[in-house]
Length: 138
Image (cartoon, rainbow, N blue to C red):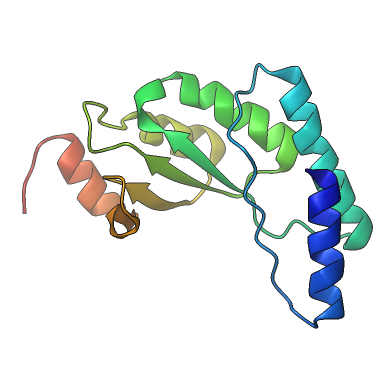
């Protein structure tokens, strides 16, 4: 993974591009070898650009509940998470853990996922989310 990121950044530089998006494979915080791989990706990126990565978005699954807190902590320590996306809010999960995460880590929540299609990814609205969480409809 780190080698691919290195090549992508070198190619972007050669093509005079100013944006490289890296989507890593899903991983759990308790899988040491995968977390080490993620840490290596960050190290490689920083060798090419000491200010990078500029944004690190962690995608969380709403069905994991309170375990999301430990996920955010682990990924923040490993990769420097700067923002969140919460998916699978269309199922039984209500996503109340977002309130705890926001309080504990002061991270912006960029999007929420309410389905499996691209159009089901919606910009996060604290007001709309809090109303939905307690069952208030507009």
